[in-house]
Length: 304
Image (cartoon, rainbow, N blue to C red):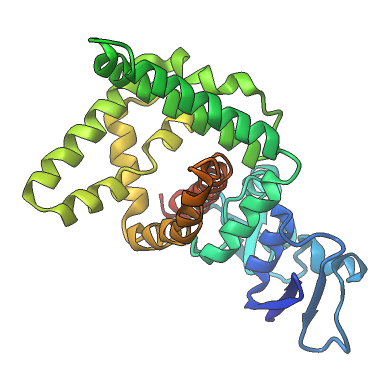
């Protein structure tokens, strides 16, 4: 079944049922959003649709099926169906937690426009906090770099921890958790891992760039999920995080490049504001990048 929903007076779709329900779980499609699929006489608010369409329903078929979360075989009557996915009762809470956090129940290829829409939804009502965190983080980095004589060294030493802290902040904000301003400093509690990741990422990118510019860009895209992985996996080391990022981004580098390129026009519009507009653009980019990470993380989990 193909779905459509209205966004600012425009029709968005067609969407598969999995993608549609994922957007609903992420808050992009709200109870008041007008939706339509073939067979409906007219557009209607999502809240007025029948309950079986909005939630996972118990399977009624006979036989067995494989749980999408754990991969084990179960009788179908012991599982629930979500779109085209079958999930066992044990894995159901974790499966829907991943969905609420933005991880896909499909193939990880959520359209970039939808990721941006999800980011705007997460930032709604939290713009002030996000702008403040971005400003203070950037100010600290700038002041560190301006210290006479030792500025470059100090900036290098704290950049990894500051980057990790900002990502921890936006991961929490994107997931709807209790987001505190102080989270931007949480990277310092993992100082060694953050510094190691920052050092090796830059080293590898520089080495690839010495060959040609393009390999350097590809390397940067390959390592782009490293700090997100560190934030979600406190027990792994920097090189392992870089390795996981490369695996996660395989086949998805171009998609992430196109996602970042979508912000070029907004960046150019920041020039007349003397770059003050970056205080709003950077949170938008950061939150959208989190949505991308959640999307490819979900696909990576399923492929392991």
